[in-house]
Image 1 (cartoon, rainbow, N blue to C red):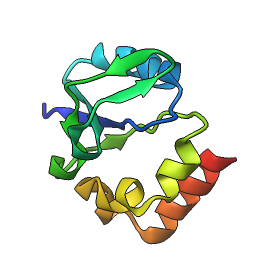
Image 2: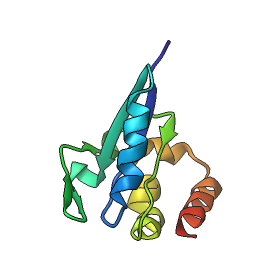
Image 3: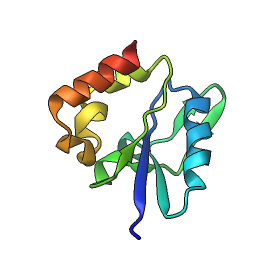
Length: 108
């Protein structure tokens, strides 16, 4: 059985619980490979928590699942070209309309 690659794009303004809870659940799934990443692999700080040693979004070529944490910075990150499409090569294969729908849903 092949691995299911799950990517969490982290960004400033995300809600830590929206990342940590699903990350924990997905990491328990057999044959799942879970990656936390950010633009340039930079550290992400939120609410006194520091997420470091992150993968670089631009170096992730493929994944089966993209799980975007919520939070006040979500709409800004999703509407930013670097996050929405350019920062994650795997997302470039998503139709533009799907990316806009995802961004609109997260902004709501």
